[in-house]
Length: 161
Image (tube, rainbow, N blue to C red; front, top):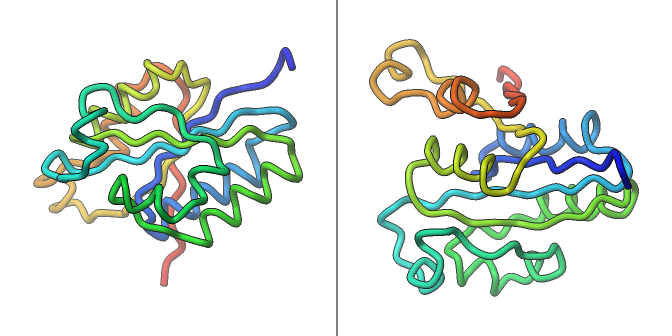
């Protein structure tokens, strides 16, 4: 498809990152697009795959392999049936290709690396909704990425309780 896009989805398995995935599936992903689920593990994570791919991130992992619970264990990820269901649905209904990639390090830097390395046309991520003080002290991943990414970035806010 000549108009197929590559869309990255930042995933940390929080409710807002799942909301971002749902939003992208319903509003952004089109026929034949490629979705790359981008997961960033802490730099101090100690998993066997980090030893192999710590500098460059994991290879792109197809949905069929990503669905396997052993994949999650090998990379220290959360096995989340809700996320898998959303990905299965968008793959089946829109013909989107779904792959996953895991990085290790600071999420701000690694998401920017992912945009450049994977040549993303767009990145969608959730907002944790930090208050003003926490945002100043901890920094906002979404603010950093919106400011520094060389592609359009959509930040999806979670619903208020």
